[in-house]
Amino acid sequence: MALMSGGVNNPAERKEESLPKYTMGVAVRLTGVEAGRIRRFEDAGLLEPKRTEGGQRLFTDPEIELIKEIAKLEDEGANLEGIKIILSMRRGERK
Image (cartoon, rainbow, N blue to C red; front, side, top):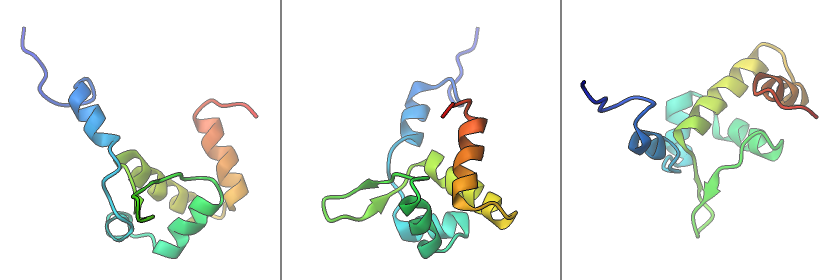
């Protein structure tokens, strides 16, 4: 039986994905979403990036994907409050 060396079943890979490692500049390049817009998502409570001691935001891989998802929903006409509801429904959360 062969062992899987990568993918979602690999705990080391999951841990790597959850490390806050992307600065705002890198997040902008990876997502194509402007920094001011990402800050609005954070202000609305849709994101909670970690911060360095100096206050610089650091984003994880899942947060990069979330930024893309939020931006897509906003581009489709949803406002930030509506996006909160959509995301919670997608995750099976109740208010």
